[in-house]
Image 1: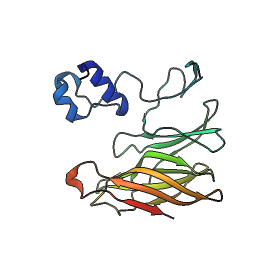
Image 2: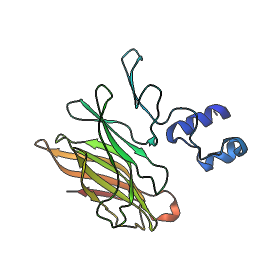
Image 3: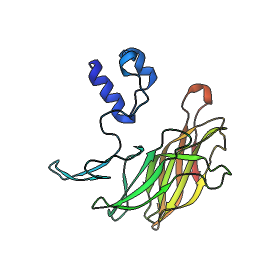
Image 4: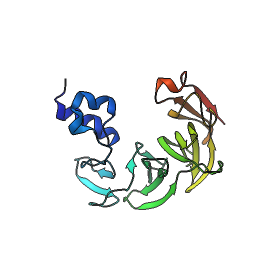
Length: 212
């Protein structure tokens, strides 16, 4: 087993905070916290093949206000990098951001569902970029009535559509666990997403959906 200090770092480096299920085993009086830790969770790095830093976004010293929540995804031509952030609560939605190859910001948008009256916050967990250049995301949306899995498409910094494959609020899945694109002739024909839930009490399992 890992030493306490190594286990704490390994668990927290992924999400930026220690899950309570791990706190009891790792001396909760020292490690249970909802505050942003001192190590880095809120920046994007580019390094060369030798491991040397090329650039860091938002700068070499500044940090984003929200956590970086998705692995980065690249445009088909490799000239644009996309990533999404997590706001941390229902009132602070995530953002989708696009950087060029030099690490400069192309655009960013706030992720909210424009169809719902209260425009619930969306948190993307997975991104995929189609050959058509559109950015597709999968995650969850949160509002006071509950949460539900969502998938969405963005083009040139504008949300094109938002899908709620299990309704809203959902009695089954709470979030999308994955996304894959079905492409033909340079165009996205279907968006496949899987759903899951955060706790067993919230539903009877996830499902797989094909969105057209």
